[in-house]
Amino acid sequence: MIRFYNGKVLTMDGSMDLTDQEVWTLKDKIFYVGPAREDAPVFDREVDLRGDMLIPGFKNAHAHSAMTFLRSYADDLPLQSWLFDKVFPLEARLTPDDVYALTKLAILEYLAGGITSAFDMYYKREAFVEASLECGFRMVLNGALAAGDDWTVGESDCEKFNAMGPLISYIPGIHAEYTASTDLLAFMKGLVDRTKKPFFTHNSETKKEVEECIARHGMTPTALFDKSGLLEHGGGGFHCVWLTWEDMEIFRKRGLWAVSCPASNSKLASGVAPIAEMQRRGVKLALGTDGPASNNALNMFREMYLECVLQKLREEDAAVCDASEVLRMACSNGAMAMGLDAECIRAGKLADLVVIDMHQPNMRPIHNPVKNLVYSGSNANVRLTMVGGKILYEDGVFHVGESAETIYERAEAATRRLTRE
Image (cartoon, rainbow, N blue to C red; front, side, top):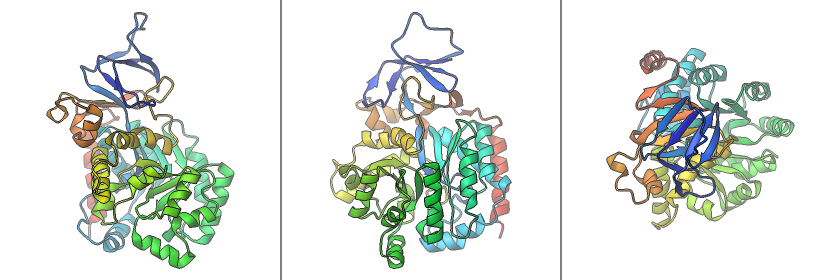
């Protein structure tokens, strides 16, 4: 049992107010949230927060973790050239050993930035899961089926990965409408109906994607997925930059999650998603980084800041997109989108927690620490990251079963092989 005390707690359990409560964890769950007690048990460890802030961990609701090998490899290129000339050819060289090494590198970055789980869409999933489990990191896998794949993998993956314990789960999906076929959509309809699982995919990331879908099918990707029956059990879309008002109504009516990735969408010039409009229309929102090739960081502080300021610029209104709600998107909403019982600090919830160092110049003076976390916070403010009741990162040191230098060396070796011309 671990005790956190003598700090400020942002439970996100309804309110976004800070409290002076203590938080105790037992195994992988939160055991107690409340005032100090005289009948407290003997703890395995007591963490004196020293006035620092305890929050639910950030949930990266859209990522391609093993793309770390492409970080800054193909920057400043047009989208189509970047994707088809640089990304796809190198991804075709990936081996399971590569994905294992590169995923561990991403996990270090997640932990150092207070990210306690990621919703990941990629290949070589067994190696990805092995790396995650060895590190003790929580991952939700999203299917990435495309027209030329063996679709039966979707069903076997769903069964296999959802039976692997609390750190690993799986939600069905396809890569995108433009890499799918009508037969694949029909197969996915059967899969989500049999499993009663939600459905997630890249959706309306670029204007070109939407225009070409309309040319093929006479409707937007969202309308096509809805007509195909894929959204009857919930789910959502990644990016959602070019949703129409009709698309937003489908998202609202179906209770779908729009996962925004502002840094990637800005870097690839895909556009600025209409987040403020979706908020007004009651669409559920979460936040993700996308992959390290298009971002290039796995950094939720940067995503939160960009989400806020880009909406103010898009709407020409500095009052839209309140920072507190964007912080909720990054923590609570991400957990709900991913199907994780970790959306707030409450007894019985998963012990996925982060300590924010308030003794840093960028967090002073303390006027509104919640909003300051969004507008001024950075990875340097992450003092401790706990996943499933285990402290995996603290004061610059990783506790993931092997040294960070070993992980760096293995990832560098994989990268050199993959990028060799």
